[in-house]
Length: 325
Image: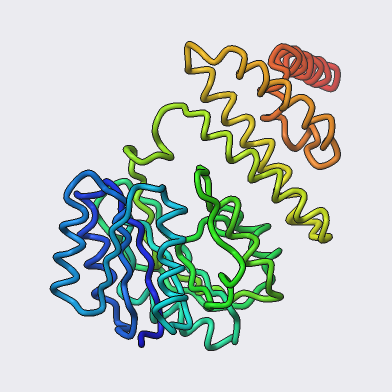
């Protein structure tokens, strides 16, 4: 059986799917199986998946009714535990693609440092072009060090190689948006160290048609619940730096949602509720989110006060300069 299982959920990505699958089948490390989960896609994605299955015996295709990204990933994980003995899993989103050495370098990193997880860096792109991967030295770090410096990368599920045991008890939450925010950190913080391949091997395509970049939906608020869970997780286990980082990320997420709702001509009650939650959070976490370091949050929570404060601040500085001329 294959050494690595590559799990790719597929839904409404007909124009990008071949780019993704071709990049996987072109890997320099060839001992892998590719599990394509057609999550009830209404376009030709299912047919394209079947075409690749006929073409390459490393490809496995699973067709299922639409259940969302978490359900599709969980289907892939379940298939691996039931029908495969691969030791390693990786997730790739079907509108993204990977460098030819993605699998080889991630596997080399876990083998070199004897860790259960390895992580690569990524490009965020809005076009079809792929930059050449930037190569840096590999290293081993604690999950807290990585989360503190690279919270976004520590949150997303893709761009990582996981040992099979990582998912013995963990699955992605179904019916949630921001499913990675609920899941990935729990995997990383199971271990004392993780390996980092300091190379940009994953190409994250900023698809403006994807769920994450569509107009307002109440499902966006799932991110706030995920942040709260992270805060509790880190506080309970004594990860101080991760706790501080998660608190600021939570406050930032509230601010982002407030700003998104400002563009909407509805949701008036929700706007008020979020503003109140922001004010309560700034009081609750005033040590972690001080005004002098996080003024951006106070501008959203108290716009009139911060405008007055900024005016007074400029006025005092101006007077001070004149006195000392």
